[in-house]
Length: 236
Image: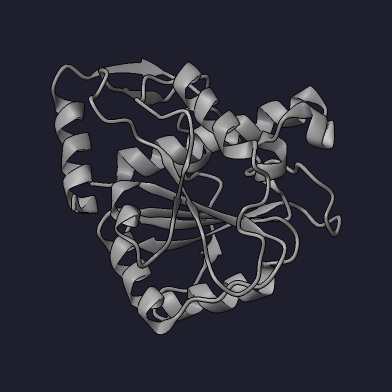
């Protein structure tokens, strides 16, 4: 089984052999990688607790298409479904979780998830309206010594490829509260990003699903491109 550490080493090697650097719309350097034999992808987290982890089925293929079209990162067409205890977790640099209901991690999953994140992995939790309370509870079990904080607007996640000077975009109404991005930091590295009162996944979906205005769909995709690019470029 290839470990996440090995995957990170592949990325680091690729970045130093024939790497070019371009400029994103925000004017910041954007990592550019030559084609790789194996594609990167997003792991959709299949978690326990009863929440609909499978929600927004068109969202991740659309985000991966945007990453492929707007960067030179070698990404697959589809996400992979992963569990925390399965070997496939260690094959993806970025895991995504969403849903409307309860999230629960077993004691074993708490330990494995922490190790995955400490070794270079990245978790994006996207509240699809209903998982806020349970996610905050469970991530506090994973990192009792590193509480979630609001990610500062100066962080690269808001500027790496596309510029978001006001932070995460507001996609859907939810409770009418401002969209916020919270995170867990290990040292200077952001390892967990929690999009709250935004619903990026809804914004990534096919137009026919929610009929979002094109500007919102585009804002959601741009934020997703930033998140994935940061995850793979910081995992070293």
